[in-house]
Image (cartoon, rainbow over all chains, first blue to last red; front, side, top):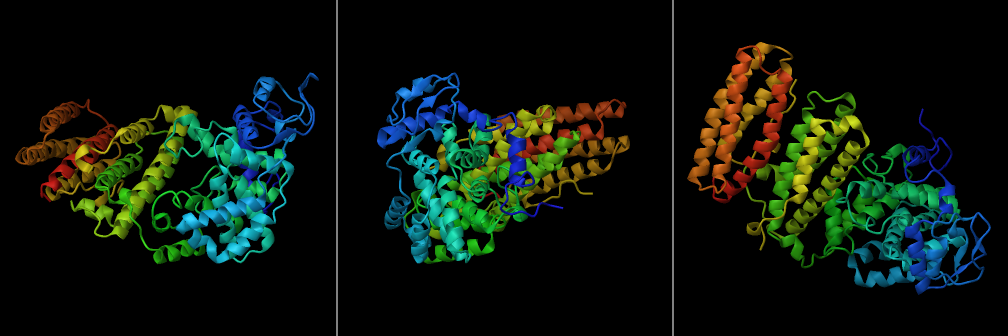
Amino acid sequence: MRPTSRTGSGPEDPVHRASAARFSGMIYTGSSDFLQANRYFLSSLVTAADRCEIHALEDIYDTSGLKLWARGRPIDSRLLERLSDRTLRKPIELCVYAADPVASASIAQQLEELLGSVPDLAALLSPCWSQVSEALSSAVPTPTELLLISVLRHGDRDLLRHAAVVAGLSIAAVVRKGLGPQVQATVGRAALLHDVGFLYLDPAIAGAGPQVALEQARLQRSHPLLGAQVCTELAHTTPAISRLVATSHERLDGSGFPAGLSRQDLTDSSLALAFAEDCTRYLGVTPNGLQRAATRLRMLSHEFPEELMDWVLGLARELPLVEDPDATSPGIEWELRRQHALIARLIVLFSLPVGEAAPVREEGSRWLASAASLRAVLYRTGAEAAFSQGISIAPESRQEAIELAALRDELHWRIGELHQRIEVARADRREFAASPMVNSALEILREHRAEKVPMEATP
Amino acid sequence: MILLPWSDLLCVGVREIDEEHRTLVHLINELGNAGEDSEATIRALDVLTNYVQVHFAHEEKLMRDHGFEHLAGHIAQHRGLTGEVARVRALAREGRGPGNDELLLFLRDWLTVHILRDDMEFAITLNGMGAR
């Protein structure tokens, strides 16, 4: 029988099981690793301290009793050298505090300002702005939570803008679901922290998308669990918040990461946060972001609850379309044809796992399912039928152009994710490294990644 | 059991070429169901020998007619594959040929490399010139 707890964090909890399995001996095994300050976090902390007031909360000692920093002293770049190779008595996150932290109310205010410049966001948030604002403003974060939020904002890279948008959308999603103010506030707090794991990773990884190198891919996919661990062990947030952070990239159908959880393991709040996170890939990033997000949701409609998708789809129909140079590029058809050919090649390959070891066949069947779901997208949109008859899919309206651009971008993203999974499997397991099917798949995927739109397909 | 169902997914968008590719996919499915039956391997190789001659000649004519710029590369590739099929067929007739699995792998790789990459590229060029 499956564990029945939906908010618990005990050893039976699926997230914790996944955490233990994935992190054992890989990134860290417990809070003792925080006793040596993480260099990426430290760099962001020092950068943030240059932009806002961060002071030592207490004398900072290493384990030999050497005093490294005095209580009350502002943090500056000398901390990098002082803490280098030192094991501390307490994690640095618990020894410093933000004297003028980014207040919850100011996050709400900045988000409100964004509504003025991002119509997609305004369409989603304006109808329930009072609840969103109230949920954000009413939060009472722990001191370390405040420190982390300040570092997210003022560190080496501003990660808070994205987090604030995700927070606003997550709250709006739970409001829509009819969940009360306490859930709204919890989801908002979790959303602000959902990418906190990135503070502990090479900044090149954060936001790099799926087209990254193997080790980066591995770390990128683990950042929600790392974030949850930071929340639990350092920020001392509630188990519900840590769990929401851990599940912020999961999907209803099990296709998310890091644990591949599915419906029975995810709460309405988890899905609201994951949904908001996914939508922000488009909102305010590209012209017609809401329409692109809606197209993406229609294409892969099994990943999120229907009522959340209906919300975005309904609003997307109402918003007027704007100029979108990327969507009218003639190179899109060429790119889609290449994606179609790639998906076909992978499906043929994974359909015929002749002579492969049992674990490779088993994993190959999952890859086949992923490739088949991408093929289904091409089929449903009519692109496959057009290509099979040699018919051009040049768009006849702005709406069609936007849908094709969204299709291309989503396929690009998903192909990158599949590529990552295969690279990781090959690197981790000997039988995968020796598999002709795995090596052929990687050859095809690498060749595809290296391809550039030819001159004749560009304007 | 059909290992690889024929579908629009595998079409390159040139009707005559797609019909011929369909034969190849049929052959893959036959081999997949033949187990270790060596007679089936020889039969498959006979079909394949005939197939490569007809299909490649047809493809090369289309390429020539439409002035396809990568024609020379395709012809060289066709010669290589034809030679390989003939060699394997001769070995099979002497009882030293590949097993069905090996042949299946050969066809799989052919499909993933030759048809779904090279022929697709040709088809895109051809369709731009109105051949459907």
